[in-house]
Length: 349
Length: 249
Image (cartoon, rainbow over all chains, first blue to last red; front, top):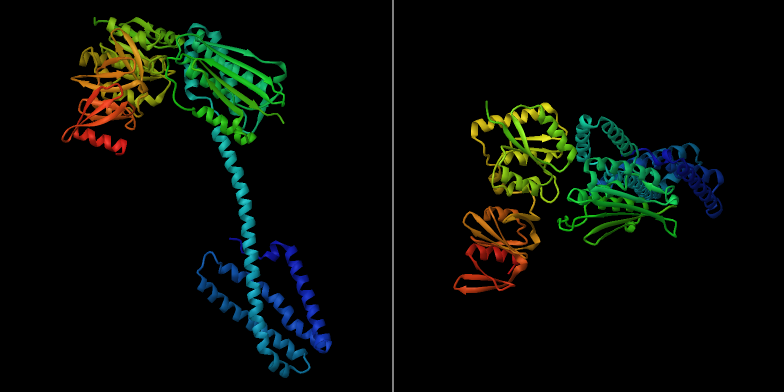
């Protein structure tokens, strides 16, 4: 917990506090002089001895409330602590006031006799006002701190969520590709080399970018072409990728690695299960609102039982778009039992 | 000189097959007698050629390597070759001879083949792998059942299964397309089908909840279930309790 005095951490507050008491003291002196007809010197002595001295001593009440917070202690314990603290502070305050009165006041014993009970009562009232004030300050500080922490936490959660949603290259893809490379080193070393290079480039792309980063559609597309190229080496004529990409789409921005899971799905549910050729089509256009619309379609064998519900890949893309663009409807899925079609709309600011 | 080990490769990727073949070329006393691109071909060739050893991929089109094993009449030694490590435990529980993780080295492959040769010397040529597969409960509920219908292989989605009847060592699976015999136990299906959708109503019957039209008292303390197509199935005392539990009556 932060025990530092709010007047130290927030000097502005200390200045307002000082000003408040100066105004109060001046007002008090004026009332005493013009209202009660008391001598100016007497009035100044009295105000300094009791009012301004409380302004100084009262700042210490902060530490009392910090040590007996309402949250951590039971009510009676707090009341008890404050009664003790109030008595000690008021004793010191009265003692100091009497010393001043005795030194400066023209008729100290009469004054003491007449005023002391009032002063002690005023002391307790002031103490109570201070306690309420400091509790309010303490509460406000806590509230501000909580807001700050909440903001920090939200940012952290968002970052963590995005990190978790980031599609990573499937390790089985990697191992199967390495097995293909292992095979090609014996039959076709040149193609093996090409595949090593393609695989490296794809891995670098998937590792390099952090989650918030957006890349050009051109860059994203090229890396997914690499992915399809590698899978084409594995699956041969079973995989037939085709592209219809207009020039004006290429400059558009897109979150990196967002298309890869879509191609991975096309291969998992289309190519893996097929004995015939599976077409994987990619098209894109710019909409009237200036958004980039990407369509990825793949044919599949309708006899193969598709897994029920939406896979984690699609859900992650949806969640990622929701976090980045605040819109969960940017991903649309259509399935006519022969062809699986995904449409992705990426807003361009 | 010992007999040559006769091998069939079941693997959907051409490059993976090439690699395996070229590794096997340098191993003595073996002979690759067939290569299959998927599980359907695999069943046909294994039952026909009766090899000593099968190299088997797991993730393949149409049916998986595990599903293929269920359909074999001839039971050879099995070495799995896959990029997926999560099936290793399952494979060994099914008494697989070895489990190769892609990509594997030639030495690792040699070791696996030697292990099989040793095993065959000790235990004879056939393995009990397919039987082990049959009774092993799966971690997830089934979503399809692969059955052999004379010489054709049929994939029945679990959604199409209406009820299952026990017949000695076999079960008869009644689906919307027809009925199929399979060498499995009722106990296996009781564990492998989602109990929310399938109820064991009798020693001899497991029925799909949606198929039930009526439950009728037959005699005192004895009930029958009538399906939508008027088929009547006996309900045992425990079966009635199961029905009550799932259907909440």
